[in-house]
Length: 153
Image (cartoon, rainbow, N blue to C red; front, side):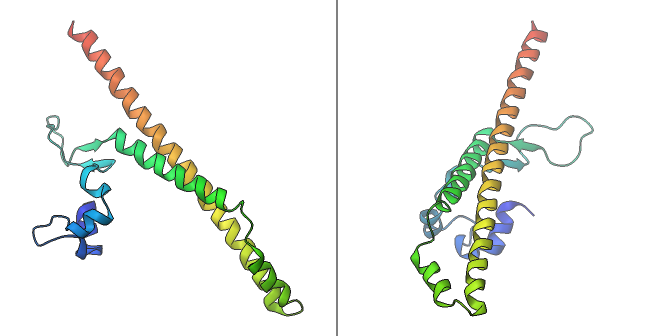
């Protein structure tokens, strides 16, 4: 099942009867209209003789954009954890001193903060990996073009 087919199954309101994005979906998700997916199957190039299946097409610019977005979100998440939770959480835990819920509030907050920081760090790593992959694809394509030009004369 292609990404668009899955998206149509999960979000039928986003598509009209012709399978196009609705105006509401375009307003809410403008990136779906103009940006190709980072990796797609199919494409217009012909497969080598004897090859079967669909061609894999990689769009380095889309990978870079996805990587930048993931890194920015991860950085924002980790930065947000540097801000104090505020007096409300501490006041709630202090008000419950002697009750099991007081310690549970503190433990829940610490657990949440650790998970949030871990997710933010993972997003930063994923973002960097996506950008590194995009650069690798671009570098390989450029090197292959250079080799083919050298062979051609």
